[in-house]
Amino acid sequence: MTTSVNPQENFAVVRMLEFLSDRSPWNRSLWGIGMVLALEEIYEAYQVMAQGHLSEGSIKQVISSLNKRVGQHPVFTLDERRLLNTHLQQVLQPGSVAHYTIRQISAVVASDYLARWGRVVNSGKFNVELLARSVAAHLLDAGFSAQYLRDFINEKIKKAHPFSLAELCNDLQQEMADSPLRDIDVLLAFSAAPKMVNGIPPSWLQGAKVISWLKKHRFDTSGVRAPAAFVLKVRARDTIGAAQAARSESDRYAARTLLATGRPLNRLPWLWVVGSAAAFDLNHDRRGVEVEELYREDRIFSADANKSVDAALELLAHLDGSSPVAAVAGGWGAIEGLLAPSNDRSAAADNLAGLVTCSFPRSELTRLAHLVRQDFPGAYPALESAPSNRERSRVIAGMIIDGTMPTLQGLSDQAAITRMGKLFQNPKTELKIIRETISDSFHRLYRQRNMILHAGKLDSVALTPGLRTVAKLAGAGIDRVTHGHYVQQLQPLDLVARANVALELVDKSNPLACVELLETTS
Image (cartoon, rainbow, N blue to C red):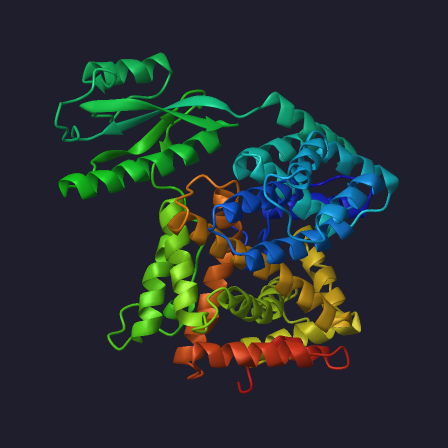
């Protein structure tokens, strides 16, 4: 429970925690990377362009997005903003002084980025949503695990009554310094020794030595039967992040083993991270891709699945649980296969962003309708008698517009009501902002795909953060494509056209139109 004397600070922290939760639905998740990483990304993009693997048009898209962000970001000084704007007006020559200047500015801002937000809070003028998104993204980009950050923030809040958001920003800045990226040992063990031409390497642990290692690091050894194991050394800021990094390494080894021997790698289902109190689940990580339409329309085991949609779903599955490289290739392949015109593959990013944007109002309203019915049973007859989710969403939208919405228990839900109220007051502008933000994430996925497949670059600064932001969004978008195909009998690009028309024609004189941007019939 947040306990700041300033309600805006309470909302900011609750939204921050929501962004750091893997259980948050796509419409309340973190859609973009942080400002510092965005500067590092454009610096890297110039280097890749110099090698011929990114087009000038791709660079211009990044510049355009970054220019807008710099203009609204309050942590920059006037001189920093002026200097950045000067270097974001045109495509720079890779390796030039101007190119290196971007990296220098990034380093300056990164050195006290969170403390700068603390000063913004103390000024009394801050945007709740921008602060929460910026701080959460910056910390995740820097290599912290989401669960570690949630635990850290919750602990700080409990100790301070009332807490100060500015002090929390400063505490997080200090934690950046106190928990640097470092080497952490992780034990990966096997239920059967892997097949190797020269046998098990001397550096590996075998037999009783596996148990000895576990006991040395104070792990419970009951049920552990491992003839062989070895210690991975990964770079992370915390033990949860180390487990995540080790899972990715483990998946790579499993893929290599299958290719080399035709046999699976028989791994035990745990990872032991030095410094943690218990073992981690080897198969824990999912990125949150969900296409619920398959369940709603009972098509999981359908024999008459459309070949194009079915193939895209198979590719999209890699975005949810495969290694970063496979996730990027499969994820973009699914999007491009359904939504790219033949003459412009990158247009698929904007097309999918339009579909996701049109889905946003209904997704928020659906949850709010459920909560009102749950918390205030029988209090709103129009809501109880509404025959469909669509009609319930219209009722809730009307209540928000009329100012008759009850106060919900959760601060995150109260914040959602505020966001929706702002959207209904100026739907075209607000939906445009949402679309641009989501489109940036999909364009980032496309650039990552090009860097991997054309440049062989597997260590891009935005590879892992980009997947974190795009996975749930991609699932939401393909869910709409699937619904459009099976329920509305619309081809994907026909559905895109419907979305584009709806977003262009939506107007504050009829805000209820936001409820049904992709529909013309019940």
